[in-house]
Each structure stands twice: as structure tokens, then as C-alpha cells.
Image (tube, rainbow, N blue to C red; front, top):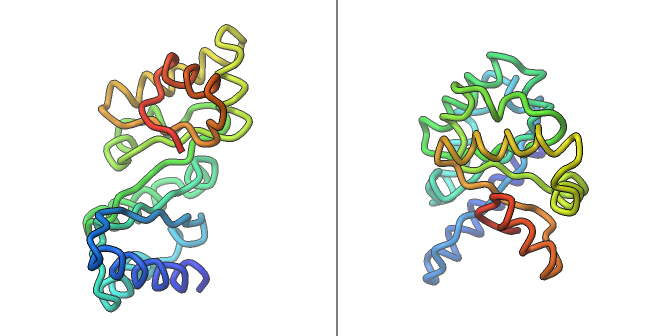
Length: 170
């Protein structure tokens, strides 16, 4: 219910913004519960259309760990959502899994890495965890998927993020 309510509010807002000349997209976090709900994709598409917005104006962000738990059912839901025109972003956390999976990579418009993970890697490029993190970034780059650093707030961290392969900052 919460995801559908937020989607309606976001669709209403983005419709207004676009009518005022702002060509921006809006991102909405969705959950494991959402992608396991067989009616979610259709409900979301109907909700967005009823507000006058277009699905391609909306980026749906899903947490990698949650999506991993949903298995094929979660990926199938994301494929349906992408078929409606929604953009899908993977919020990557923990060890790489889906970010390296070919079927999953085809769905994502961006790979988001942030918070303490991104800042730790940016400050310790040669640490043990950095090689797995770098494989994730390189896989996304190889697939032509933008890699977004979430939480880059200082000029030093911004420089480091670009040096290790992030293509966008948030």
C-alpha cells in the first residue's frame, strides 16, 4: 500500500514538474514485498498513468539483498515493470551478486552504491573488500550501466569516486 501511495504522489508531482518544463525523473524505492506481489506491476503502471505521468519518468530502486531473496519471481516482476517503461536501479550493498548476473544487468538503468560502503572503498582502494567492489563497478561499466555514488559529499570523496569508476554522484 505504501509503495502504491508514494507512486501516486510521485507521479502527480513529476507530471506537474514536467508541465512546468523540468525534464527530471523521480526515484521511488520498492521492496521485496512489492516485487513478490503478483499485482504490483500492473497496479503501479495504472497508478502512474491515472496521474497523467509516464512510466519512463520514474526510476524504481530496489535493494540488491532484497531482490536476491526474491529469486526469479522478483526478476520477473522487474522485467514486467521495465516492459511498462519504468527504469530500474539496483541499490547495491554487500558482496556482488545480481550486479554481475547477465539477466539482472539487462534490467538496470543504473547501479547505485552508497553510504559507508562507497566511502570506505573510496578511501581504501587496495583493501580486501575493494576487489569485489571494483568487480561490481567494472561489470556495470562493461554493460554500459551508469554507476552512481550515493553520499559523496566532500570534494575529496568526489574526486576519489570518479577515479575508481563512478560515473554519477548523488
